[in-house]
Length: 345
Image (cartoon, rainbow, N blue to C red; front, top):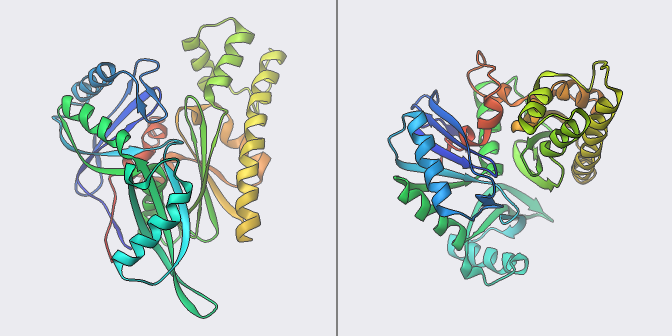
């Protein structure tokens, strides 16, 4: 399905930062903001403090000079359940009933408590029979209802809900659509380094394949720096971005060792995801892209490239405007990708 750019406003609400991206009809980013939220405001898609989030939304809108109105919300978290199914080619209503039957075994409560969406990713043959490969995504209605209410109170109207996995799939396909030298053959991995976790997502032949949340994150590296330098969090964050403790020598051997240890532990977990993909598809990973605040760790891309033997690139390389390499793009990947739309067949 062709992917197109749209004039859109998209929000990506993480544990620590709220991101708003507004695009023009040609996909140019015309307004954006990365706004720090109060600690504990969001816990894995659950809005804990309504008033704090509303205040953050209003503050971010003001900084970005964004008037409000309808918006897209892109979601990522453990409460989103995504599964692939192989199902017979059926009429739409029959196909949906089959999806409900298959998905109900993965849901902790009744399926009528969930928004359930799907898309047919490809038509394949199994034993000579035409089958649909279907990607199904579910999210609890309570989560969507809460976000819709909070956004409304902040002067925004929720019109589209997307997931990070689906949004980035569209961005990968869009890059290939516009530049045939951008290959989607085999596997592409996107690593999103968040405050409390790292999400490793692999796309096969341009389609979402597997995603895993790793309970290691940039915060553990910041804590290691703070412990070994006696600096506060802000100073430790600056060291993390500005001082290469991975691939360059450093006078403080304990500090360097502590950071390398944290990164190596994370790479072990990422390796498990890559190995799972390779064992199931018998295909290699051809590129790794880094996004999120933790991806700004100095020297990380070169260190990972040496470790995996795979090209490691920054999220900025996935944006259509290749002239911009702003570090801020590391935070905006999901929000920007969700402004893209996939034409229905």
